[in-house]
Length: 248
Image (tube, rainbow, N blue to C red; front, side):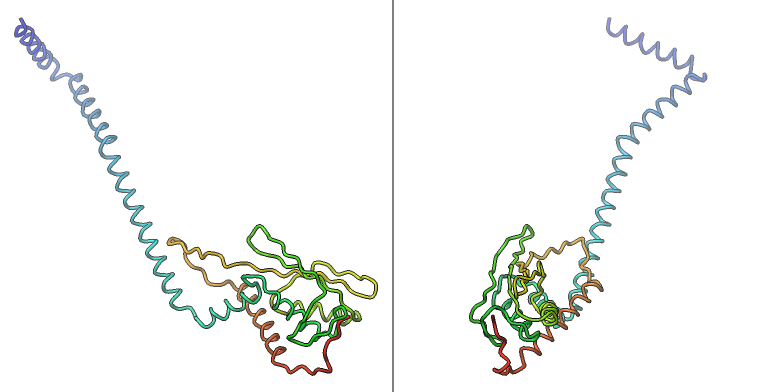
């Protein structure tokens, strides 16, 4: 019975084939089958292979770019002037110390007071020796890991000397910021802010080029260098005991 059904099916297929093989329907049927198979191959094989090929090309381009940047960074670092780099590091450390250094702050105030001729409270000191200071020192932590030291001073002197002191302290390292200037009785109250900040962890990415210092940053280091030279020349001078700055 089953053989008869198979035979009938084959006979039907032959009949349909010979009946429609020369007709447009048979051509359209074959064309539809070819198009369907082609679409399946395109979406299931060709397109994934193309996507994989483009992905490999993108990865290759990204890797080559990283290698190029690494080579440029190595070349840039090998051509750096190590003496200039160390000088800039030292200047930056003097301007913004990595930790609180009260001795450096007091030295800067001492030199500025001596050079401007003002007196600080009723103490006396020479350039480089400070036994005590009347200014109150406060420590505050900031959100960016920097530490602020606040130094409050009471100065005695005329207007020109006070202006000269402000100029002198502004051109001394470490750098300072004047928070407040006020007149209290016969004294001039000045609040100074000094900052310190620990070294940040260097962040060198393999896909990011190392850029040289900008012109603005170079100008900053040039200014710090001039201030440092001024400080060095002041420190090398011999202080005459008769010119000891009176405090108070």
